[in-house]
Length: 228
Ligand SMILES: Nc1ncnc2c1ncn2[C@@H]1O[C@H](COP(=O)(O)OP(=O)(O)OP(=O)(O)O)[C@@H](O)[C@H]1O
Ligand SMILES: [Mg+2]
Image 1 (cartoon, rainbow, N blue to C red):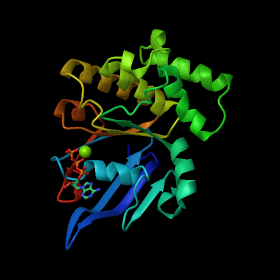
Image 2: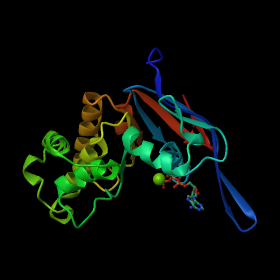
Image 3: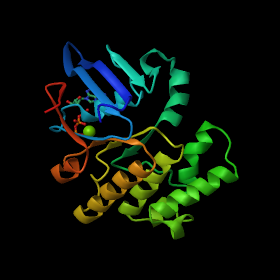
């Protein structure tokens, strides 16, 4: 993997949470480079800062120090508006609780990723349909999220995350609300479609079996990533 250029490079990321007089140092200089198309898992105790780290990598929150490079772009130097626009093209996210829009159907949820970036035409509709087919939901495009099982909802979220052909997917405990078998299937699917789409994957998980399926297993401990 080291011969491939990194799709993401983070160095010295720091995050503190302050409450009253006390400061909680959650991230104390996190370094991470992810190669193009690589899959990486991150484990760590509850409260170790995994979600905090993913939010920094996604540019949803700012690090107090360090650098964040998306492709060749210094994301940590982009103004907020530009960061948001670039995020929509550069990465997709999958969360434990799906975060689908309840009022619109599965196909519209997938298309929403493209709508946020601009127009939706025949090309985008065809891509959304193809992605829904790929995640096994060809017949479910017109179902509302409430009419889908947890596993099916997460499949919609995976399709949505890939809609804009991102370089990278960030997944935060995507199987946290699923039973074991459904969770295994979602992880298998996520790994397969990311490989097909040549999207790198950063997977936060508590499940060692899921972590072992990735190219590289990392641990977040004492505010830093242990590269083993
Ligand atoms: N907005 C916030 N304000 C104050 N403290 C916060 C905030 N968000 C997170 N924290 C604290 O930062 C620490 C790291 O939280 P984070 O959610 O990143 O952990 P995590 O590793 O994702 O945990 P889990 O495995 O339970 O999801 C925790 O101690 C948490 O209480
Ligand atoms: Mg978390």
